[in-house]
Image 1 (tube, rainbow, N blue to C red):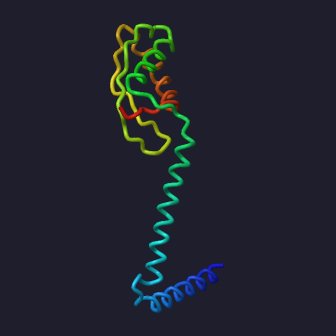
Image 2 (image 1 turned 180 degrees about the horizontal axis):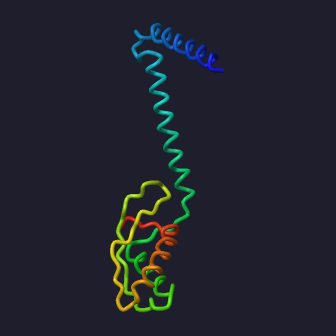
Image 3 (image 1 turned 180 degrees about the vertical axis):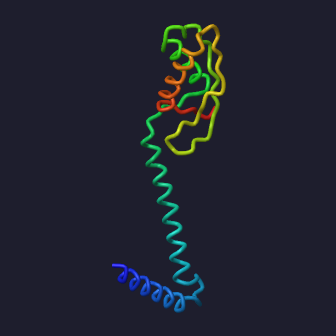
Length: 139
């Protein structure tokens, strides 16, 4: 198998040299440079299509910062006993590392009179769930 790959690569290289030599004087450039431009254009088009397809698979709902902060606070208040006096969270934008990563994170927490360890556990589970469900819109 390896021998056939070497033979094929030799013929491709030889064919490329013949095409380059035969077309290097053309006003549009050599056949190799034209093919490279077409491949580059095709790959750019394919990347754009792939981005559009990935965008349609994202089912997360877009929310503004105040809406998201309010939703998180209400969910924490209802998550566990001892969290009824939880006040608020502060949410900030962050750059996701991949397409499905969340684009927001908790920047600060206002506990009020809520039990901190209980509120922290409730907040962690609520944030983990909501990061899968919501995106932060551009305010």
